[in-house]
Image (cartoon, rainbow, N blue to C red; front, side, top):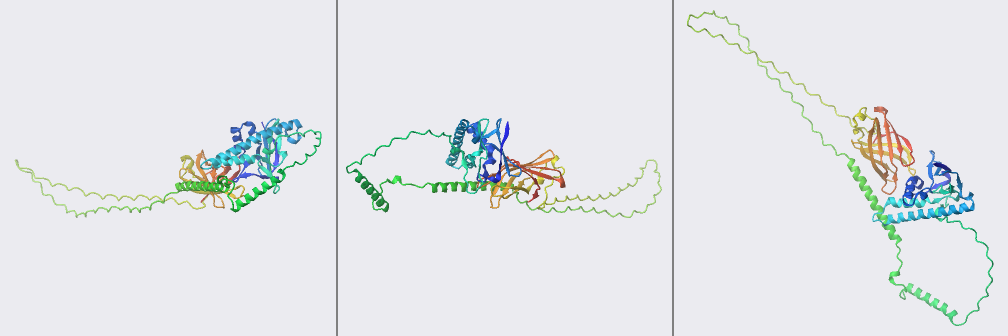
Length: 456
């Protein structure tokens, strides 16, 4: 069962970190590393921090029956045993930190993540004072780890230098004084200074170039620190160039090619009406002659044939109505979910880039964080965080409908110069002009903000 064992004030301490990431923000990752490489007892040494909503207090939790007893309040025998346990655990953690850092530097392309983990493990062993060491059920627990004293110039304590407590040695009987030996005779007392003087003169002459150096050429000291620093700098530049090239390719994939110019459709040609032949005036009815019955044996007279009536003109075809083009999206337009988008699972209205102020600030620069999302018509895209120094951090993002709710899921945004921003999740509800969004960070802090996205 996890219990609260201590509460600290942030104003009295100074947080320690590397590459813009504080050690206490990575408790879950550090505990997992210790559990995997060393064991559960090493992982339980670091108490779990819970930061207050106002950012002023830190509550520390640990597994155990309780209560938490400071090291200074324990009896001597229990304090000696607890110090020995702490020294062994801290030595193992420091050795793991050095091994991970060395393995990361030995790789052809230095592993940024592994090197950062080794640095954060070393920072986790530092704390402000001896009052941070507690005993919970006979097991050592460290609070305020990853912090230094708040006063300027104060140096934090390192748990790896604690060592086991040693009792005061018993007093010994004074040893009887031994009378001094009489000075020896011979030539040794004056010959040794002469030899030292000759050796010093030879070294000075070799430095001045008058005599050859007594050391072989292979023993000349070579300063490799500058060479190692230059190699690390070159590796950092190559990694930053690789991340920039990757971001450029991802941004290029999101760009839509310019649509070809629309060809003007010719207006439909209406068929000309067929010419209606003019009707000739009907002739006056002729007077039928009297029908004379033929005599017996004569053929009867033929009757005149009737002419066919003229055809009626065909009706003119009606022109088809033209479809009105959709209006182009406007800049700074609020994000609104169309009424039938969730039913049709249609995400095409998100195509483009959207920004929203979060009210959050990055550490340690204390710069405001602005959320920027860019999607295609299928809801695939990326999240971008733009810093004032020109650095652009990015990570993949995905939009989808969960019932009637619109969700943005963003992975961590990696930065070219090291560091990253924690994952984000955005939930939007409503439709048309009543859309409301809520953002949340998933990196352990679970900070939330009211998101109001506008088209960029």
